[in-house]
Image (cartoon, rainbow, N blue to C red; front, top):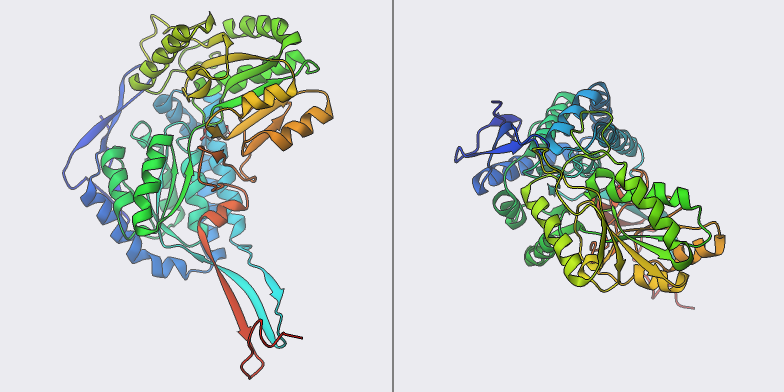
Length: 491
Ligand code: UN1
């Protein structure tokens, strides 16, 4: 059995307490490897190493830092197929999706590397003569990155690549469900030339390693993708020492289907949005809000197509849907199926585990006659469970779409441009798609949500650099005299 280590100050080490945990293949329930269960001592070691490395890394010219990212991108590219196969074994997602996940990390590495020759500030005239004004970007310091299981390479890359090119040093704490891909990513970054101490890896469980990272006073910022509950705790805990926090939390993402939509296109989009990645995306579509007239046709076609989805090992290229990540998630999905039935929603397809498959497999599941206020339609399930909700018109559809706590992704299928622009204007979400499902964000655009989905932070795109830099405003006075802003400018 492979035993993996922590990466601290450029060295692969056992955890201080010597404890380990098992990483399980969710499709077969076989153990993939043993990983170190990092504790507070290990986190402190990692943070001290990152702090030590900060001075030199932050003063390395950004284009030099970027060269390392370009190398990492090329190494990821060379190993794309191998990494995708490891990911399917560890996470369960089907191979084409695992390849997409690796590609997202490659894209982010190249994109962030390009920022090495940008990292733009602004210049603007002064209100006074012989004075120059500008902003410059500075790295934040030691940053803590806490990542989920559902994008084992892409989400760590979304955080690591921009944080690196911006000159920060860091500690990554990946999900205990997907430590293997994190280890592989760190190896690649280290081979690409990231200096020792600049990036550190502490695998382990959230309650221990994650908590230690959040409580460390030397950590200046935390970037977290995960549950609302943990996000709220991080935010309140970090207020005590004024850490900068960026949160990407849950979603309850709606797709609106209008009477005038291309129905087959909408069915295609809903299937992919709801059941792709077995519904385990923050951006997964979990509610379809359908205008009355087309509801019967849409429902019939959707159920037919859902029945045709094949679940099984993601390594089998004919499979559409892999397993859920672990027993806890499976139990949660089962609980929500019961909640839906108790609330009076009608189960029209799925609703149970797939036997005799040994892993955590669950059928694509569709409920109809769901109403907006049901728990089914309000709470994030993070599995292949879709609620169909009827709407009278666009206004009611938008009202239903906005009636949840979250606001990450959203979508409308319509051939009417006025409907589309109404949706863009009125949907409370960080992302709106027109005639495309709620998933599939591209790395060069800002990603994030409103309301309970986050705290206003946006990852990726040009905003990725905002997440990991501080702006300094510079006033440069070359007048050789004291000039008083607001006062010398009067009359
Ligand atoms: C997530 O589930 O947290 O837009 C991220 C998408 C992916 C990223 C999802 N590119 O679905």
